[in-house]
Image (cartoon, rainbow, N blue to C red; front, top):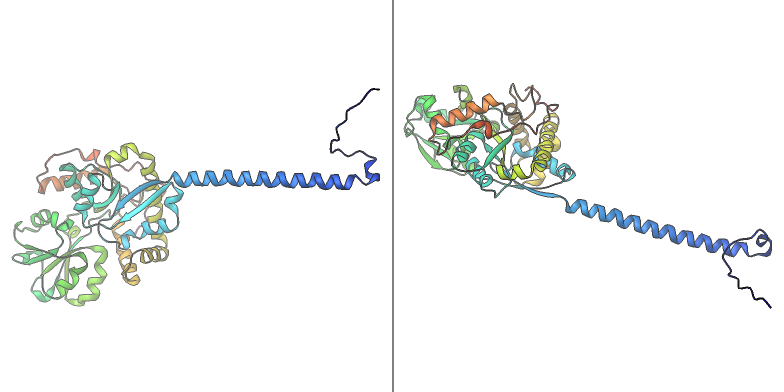
Amino acid sequence: MQIVHTVDYPCVRPQDHWNGRARPLARQLKGNRDIMIKIKGTIAAAVLLAFSSAGALAQEPLSIVLNWTPGADHAPLYYALSQGWYTEAGIDLTIDAGKGSAMSAQSVGVGSHNVGIAELGTAFVARSMGADVVAVMSLYANAPFVFYWKKSSGIETPADFVGRTIGNPPADAARIMWPAFAETAGLAVDAVNFVNVAPQAKVATMAAGQVDIISDFYNGHDLKIDTFGDDLGFVRWSELGLNPYGNSFIVNGDYLANNRDTIAAFVSVTQRAYLACVEAADPCIDALVASASGLDREEMNKQWGRVKELMADQFTTTQALGYLDGAQVAKTYELVDTYFELETPFDPAEAFTSEFLDTNLKMIVQ
């Protein structure tokens, strides 16, 4: 007798539809398909999570030190951060408060921070002393420096500064650049005495008569008007012909050489953020106030209006927002070189670049 071995495969024959076997087998096959779909879905989710985790791990840490404590001129940074723009660009940005342009330039120069904000002339002085810094974008295309005083103190013009006291922090850009102002105003370098005053205490110190004059940036002009009214006297340095580049974004040179893509991404997001805030300030001020305690929203709005004035010049409105013009950079260097004994002279063309800026994003004329 021949024995035939058979295997019962879960197939459905036409006649099974009539003998009742089709329904159980169909349910079994459907169950198998459901299991496979679930398994595939689980695998797909795991793969997606793996890619998402890899993307999160791929974020490049980047630190920036401000020139001072957070203010309206920094609002676009906090806005872009709150909107996730830096994260989308692959950057894990950390923002630290600063203590003056000189200290910011030094911190970036030695690599303690990757990026910083510093007055460009002060950054050049630091570079001549060995700080490895390169400017990649202007913030203040115009010099922001202003000297303020009370008319009731007897001061009418800078000629009356002789023998007076000026209150500002030791690393304040105006103190560092004082020799240039003194020369332009016809004063001796030692015509005044400097008194150390914290940034937040400048107005109160002058109001109390503890100093005769304070230096400050033009973005805080409205606070002085509100405080002193008709008794306020002031002079903008630019009115005397001293108009070097003001605050600029500087990068550690070694970091730039090895992380060009990261800096390109940072500049791209930052430029876009500043233009967005020029076009609509409220969301940016909201982000600033939410991120930095102790700020008055109305005051920050007023400051931002002055910041926009400082940002606009013939180059930022025609070439690109944040544009650094070579000839203007050279004039800034010449000014510094004239009034300071630079330890090591350098070619200013090697200390800046505008290559990362999008020329389609231009500053709006103010």
